[in-house]
Image (cartoon, rainbow, N blue to C red; front, side, top):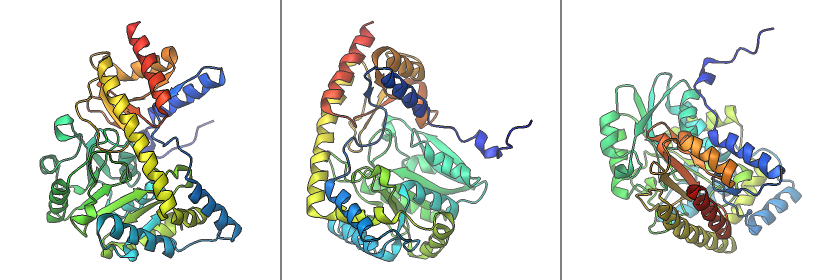
Length: 388
């Protein structure tokens, strides 16, 4: 009997390698092993109590029906107020669409902006799902190799070098995953001007805004009203499982995105939208600030500790909660190294292969999304592993 005939695109859409690693880590834990988790890009803190309380209240009040496809009007207004308060920007609520996570925003954008065969330029290394969203709409992800000298970012100079007649958009992230680096205002302005001059679009992933440690992140909305900005309640706001994000679009693109949202997912989860309103209350903001400081403390411990063990980390990440480490002094195969580290030392880290192809075999990503004592235990285990 013949198997299911899958679409050709499935040959190009690869799973997260780290998910297999995570599954193995869970199996080891089920067998009684203790695993230090440095692989998952999910805050270890539970959702803040004010948000949980607001979610319960929403359920009790019967807020379980569809919202408009563009999102709960009260939440769109709250986000507009947020841009005014935090960045000094006037962003009309009608330009803000609430989505099922930032992934929902990316799905809308690729469907709206990318015709079959058109290219989207993005950094390699970068968030792996980005290229798959492009492939889903029969576009082509053009992965541009970047190094520490570029800040692991798609710079204006690299965009100029790699843009072609088939290019439709640039996709950048600030702060970035996996390196935690930022684009400054001048770079964002240059990228926005570059895209507009060529009839293309600039998409900026700002889901780690709020989680910066040595500087304030500049929103791309400060440099142009023609950019597309996506964000999420998952990282800074700690609402990963609530599946809630948002998208800010140019005025003339909102109607098309609204139409797509109606057809693709109808609306983001209603209780999550009501709960998210509490994220902007002073009590919740104070909790987020405490957690930001905890992430900074973890970064400031783990960065020098890994460097001392022989990992090369040329840039101090200004945001997010990752360290992108060159392990070539210790191994020539980061994927095998990550597997051995898990099996022999009980430490789970993400191999560079998940973030692209450029120098993937010489890099690992460490996520400091676990407690300081677990980070210390992880470092002790890695040191002992290397000594063997």
